[in-house]
Length: 93
Image (cartoon, rainbow, N blue to C red; front, side, top):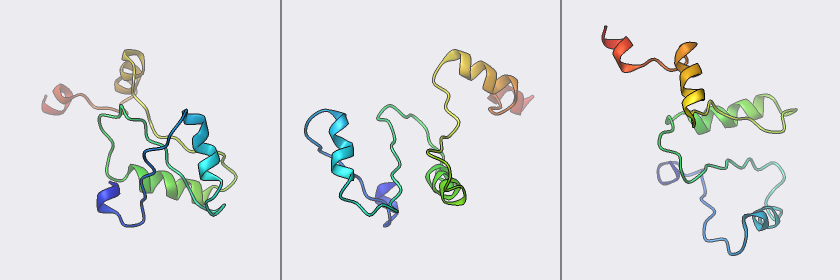
């Protein structure tokens, strides 16, 4: 996504523990919105970042905005059960 959107910037190659990241970010404009994406994400919809940012702009009282995360069998079960995720076999039957 960073490569296809000129307004995105990747902060990389920070030395030291991840907690030092916040010290580095203090140098940015206070109105800058940061989106942290873990390195183990296997799928993210192309509109995920724009929607997260738009939600945060629309609700400045929010401290943080998060997407729907499926990272365990339990969360996958409930996502399918309440039809947030539609399994392939349900689409074809």
